Amino acid sequence: MKHAPLLALLAGLSLAAGVHASAADHVHATHAWIRVLPGALPAGAYVTLENDGDQPVALTGASSRAYAQVMLHHSSTDGGVSRMTMVDSLPIPAHGEARLAPAGYHLMLMQPAATVKPGSTVRLLLKFSDGSTLSTDFIARPANALDDGSGHADHPSS
Ligand SMILES: [Cu+2]
Image (cartoon, rainbow, N blue to C red; front, side, top):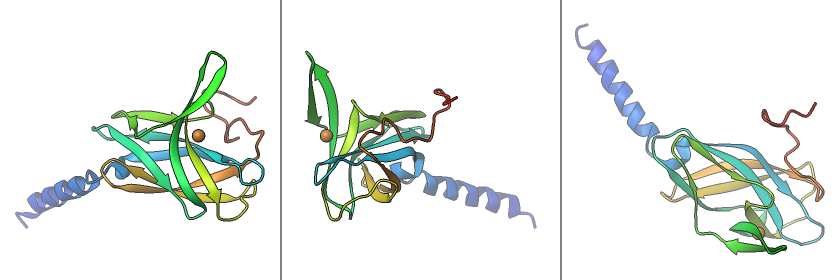
């Protein structure tokens, strides 16, 4: 059949166009974890976001059924005093990554609907500037955790 290759090519092109439809399709979340503090204290959520697309994207916030409110924050230290500021969006460069980590960017989880126990999983819906969302499971870890405990290629745990 003479036209088959052309049809296959067109099908491939439309598939590619679909893949490029939203920011969330290009973002991959790894090392997603939450540092749970005692009582009803706000918890920090951390994740590495990799963007494999040709366009920069921006994280604008998140939501979760497990918390009444989620805010995007940045921690910094100024003259020995640590402070948190609200952030409207966190850019993720094309073919780059953005890291949410302790003492830096984080999602602040406020007013848990129920006690979140270390070892449990909390699902967050990450939101991007184009309105797309990425559902990501975060592992809850105790207050003294420094990272997600999975180890990193650049920090061997040997
Ligand atoms: Cu915060």
